Amino acid sequence: MIRSYTDYPLQKHHTFGTNATTKYYFEFTETEDLQGFLAASKEWSNWPILILGEGSNMLFVTDFPGLIINPNVPGIRIVHEDRNNIWLEVGSGVVWDDLVEFAVFNRWGGIENLSLIPGKVGAAAVQNIGAYGMEIQNQIESVTGFDLETQTEYTLEASECQYAYRDSIFKNQLKNRFIITSVVFKLDKFPEFILNYGDLKAETEKLGAINLRNIRKTVISIRESKLPDPKVAGNAGSFFKNPIIESLLAEQLRATFPNMPHYPAPEGKTKLAAGWLIEQCGWKGFRRGDAGVHEKQALVLVNYGNATGKEIYDLSEEIKQSVQQKFGVELEREVNVIGE
Ligand code: EPU
Image 1 (cartoon, helix red, strand yellow):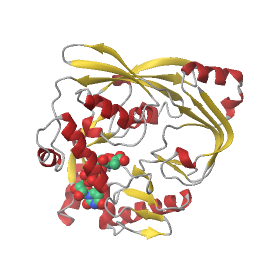
Image 2: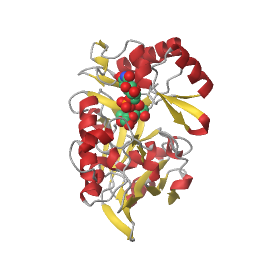
Image 3: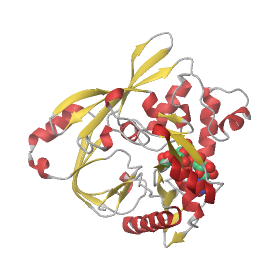
């Protein structure tokens, strides 16, 4: 199945829900259809390209002057199984939380802490989604897609994907070039639960037994209590990454701000909580027109109705500057900005 449009409105294709259009839009469910589309015209090779899933991590400041490709490949298929593990090949267009629900229902562990994260499977593999002590890179076995530059389809093993905190090869060398069509996940039949983040263990215990179903329920209720539903108020989850800084600088900051949350990060560095930094600058619950900062989680910027992408972007710039001024820490956007 393909869908192909010119001058196409994107409001329903990204979770901030601001007005924007794209010059061309192409959605497909079979890789052959993509190949057919690309072969039919070489015009696209001069256009800017954007690969878009559910648009849960996008901010359109301007219209998009090129071609948006949406790989909406369906399907979950068991590819291999042994005593301890099961390998699932999942289409990039599968809604991420549908996969988590399916895994938990079948009692396969490894992604339950990632319940209710918006977006689709392809984007999950691009972003290395993470929450409550779990990161998807640990469960990804391989990623298959179509490379627009070489015009070939190939598979990358997880070790080739350059995974790091909210980062991967798909956000760097292969950005808007490698169109992910499927991902193979390795799940555990006898999972070890990861419950050491915040109140996760205590909250799950309140439901009775600690099992996949109850962990999923707890994560969902924690997320629902803290994070706005994009269907109610447009947002893209965390707008910024949690900054990773030199530990010496973190120690200096802690001398002035003893309550500052801090976590160990790779290479002996320290990760700070961007939400805390932003809240300390007085932004939590701030609203100007329809652009605002969520009242329960300062890391989330919100479109309360008719905010423009530019208004949200300008607010994010002000937030960046005030965090820089107060803490000397540079915030990096997690959200992909179009038209910056
Ligand atoms: N905090 C504040 N004020 C705030 C928000 C947070 O003081 O407004 C403090 C909290 O009290 C806590 C610390 O900051 O001490 C961390 O907060 P939280 O547990 O809410 O997590 P986070 O670091 O703000 C990250 C992810 C979320 C993920 C949660 C849970 C990033 C950029 N964000 O947020 O992911 O759900 O951990 O694991 O890493 C997303 O990427 O869209 C997202 C929601």
